[in-house]
Length: 76
Image 1 (cartoon, rainbow, N blue to C red):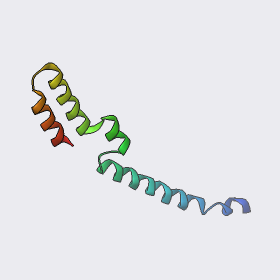
Image 2: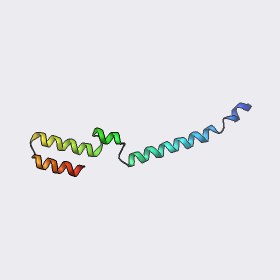
Image 3: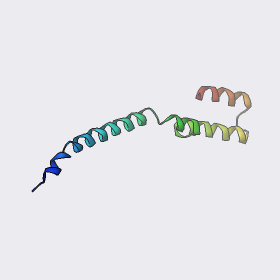
Image 4: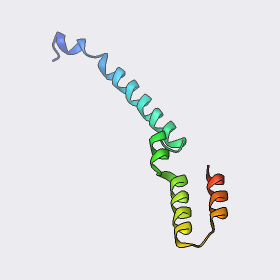
C-alpha cells in the first residue's frame, strides 16, 4: 500500500510529461528550421556543404573569381 507521502508527488508525472512534450516540440521546430544559428555559422548543413564544394572548386581552378563570387552571392 502507498503511504501518505506517495500521493503527495502524484502531480510530478503530468508535469514531466508536459515538459517532455514541450521539449520534443521545440526540437522538432528547430529541425524543421534547418538547425540552429550555430550550425549556419560553423558551415554545417546543406548550405555549408554547398559553400564547401564551391570553395574547393575555386581552389582547384575549376571556376574563375567572377563565377565564384556570383555563386557565393546566390548561396547567401
